[in-house]
Image 1 (tube, rainbow, N blue to C red):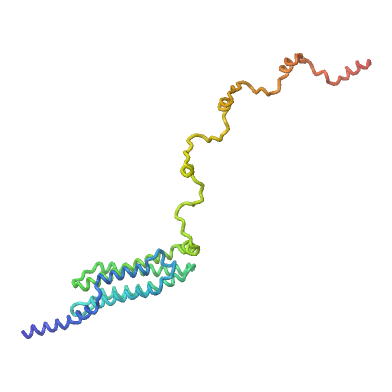
Image 2 (image 1 turned 30 degrees about the horizontal axis):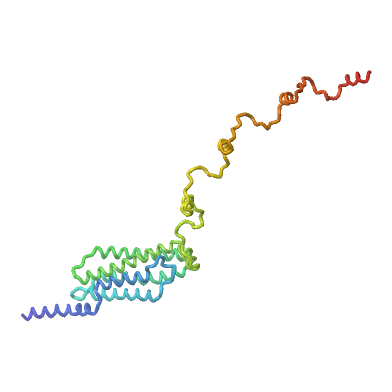
Length: 283
């Protein structure tokens, strides 16, 4: 009986620190996960990470949430003898280190406007953070824990690692995009970005018909000059079938009109030849 009581005291003394640490943390796993989602969207939930500087109060709130994750993990990843789980402890260290590198990297990239070499360097940093979080997520997903506390820490660490990975992935993408010019011009001039075709294009025939409530003509244009047939019908005049009547008369027509014979020889008004001139002078 005394031996049994002795072992119960030993087990109770071992479990007492575990229950004390668990009661110190007032937030549940669900609350921690929800806080990670809410503050991540508030801090990093923008179209482009580097268009505007992230407010310091949002960064402070996000860093406070990561400390809540650390506090929760320290209170729940120990076994019944108070020994911390090496896998969860290492995952926590890697995740917090990546987060502490991600925040200043985003701030530095925002200030590096127009510096291509710096943007390339920061893109490499974001890529390494994304890859490191991918390794942590894969390692945590492969592990199975018996204790419920360790399972909860596993889920919380997976949530935080996933959001850090997605933020680093987005930051890497935004450093490689020429996205600053158009949004900044639009913001400076207070003008929206046109998403459709230009509004100053001339209307189509169908649009013109709808605006003026006029049917679309299906035939040829009505302002074309009339054809010969249309002209004849409008003026009630026959279409001339022969050659034009205003052409100058031929020699034969001229002779017939004036009742004069057509000269068959050379013209009579030509100057005399030398022989004719000699005969005219009698010599």
